[in-house]
Image (cartoon, rainbow, N blue to C red):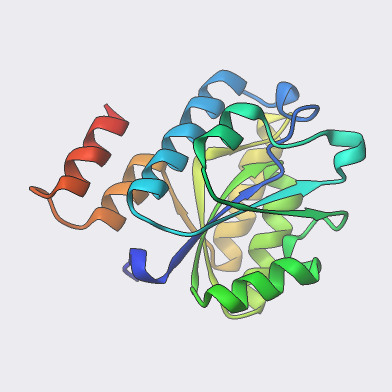
Length: 180
C-alpha cells in the first residue's frame, strides 16, 4: 500500500517533559522527532499532539512545541488516543486514513492507539526510529505486535521520501536537507 501525503495525518503521542528523559536513546529520539516534525511541516500534513495526564507528566517537550506554529493538543488519561473522544472526532473531521504514529511509550500508548486505529478502519504507520520506551525489549516487542496486528512499520527517512514521491522538486530539496 502506497502512503500518500493527501491522505495522511501525523500523531505525536505523549512526548512530555517528565516522561521523555527516561526513554532509550533520548537524544537521538529528540532529533528524529524534530526532523519528522519539520518534514511533516514541509509536506503540509496536518498533525495532532496528545498529552497523557499533564498534571503528572507535564507538557510536550519545548523543542517539539516550537517546531509547530499551529497544532492541536489533546489531553487524555486513556492509554489509547482512540479512547479520547476529542481525538476520534478530530480524526473524523480531518478525514485522513493513513495515520503516522510517533512518540512514547511504544509498548503502551503507541501500541494501544495503533491497534484501535486498525479496528476503526485507519492505517497506522509507526515510525520505528521515532518511538521509544524506557526498556528496549518493550519497544521491540511492541513493534512486533503492531506489525502482527497490521500496522505498517517504517523509518523516518523512508516515510518522508515516500510522502515526497518525486525528486527534482522544491519539496524534495527541503526533505533531503532535513535527512542529511
